[in-house]
Image (tube, rainbow, N blue to C red; front, side):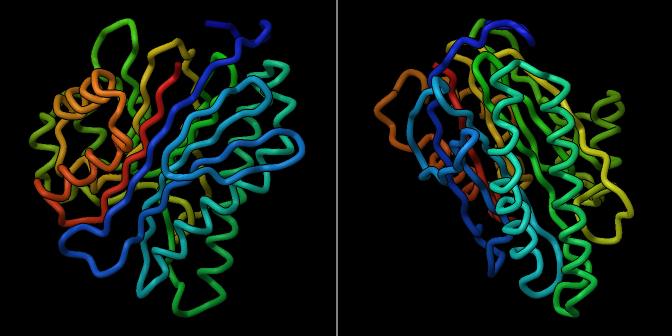
Length: 280
């Protein structure tokens, strides 16, 4: 594993993504994104694949839109599309190991998405109040930089063992109660105000203050980007089981799809999205 400012060590990235409308909703307001980019261009990736950070960085994101009519679906799309415009111009920062520069880029990116959503929501009646969550990971050699707003999540399962770690903090009062040990995971999942957001991109929020962080990556580390609809049908221990099963059965084409389908069978009241990334 490298440290910020040291010579970067290239790594292989393997990913799979899947989203489902669920068994109740009529439209899917979730979205996920997989990108490969360098200083010159950005390339949209498929639902599953494998590549190297030798000459490019990678970005993965999930978002859960909110709003009347189709506004929520549109909001999540605006969020993921905006990502494609700023990151290529910032590729040289990660290449030089400039941790502070990457953090500034992520803050600026989230601010641009927030401003775009507020503008569109205020300009068109059918888009009034449109907002979205966003959990974004930027993979560079040896590191994952992440930014987050809302109640979608990024999980981290270290290759060296240890428990599943939730890197992001849910921007809800229920999430605060859970983090401070005042309620259990089961109580958090059944709490009547579990989906009431304190922070999101767009909507009536005056400013955005994303959570920013970084994690050193080693071979075998696994990351899960997911919306709250997936978590409604999968407890943390089951997420660990599925991630480990994916390691033991590398022939499985899409681990994310298995996660989403199981979540929908178990719950299915909301849209469900998963994006699984393995460092190798």
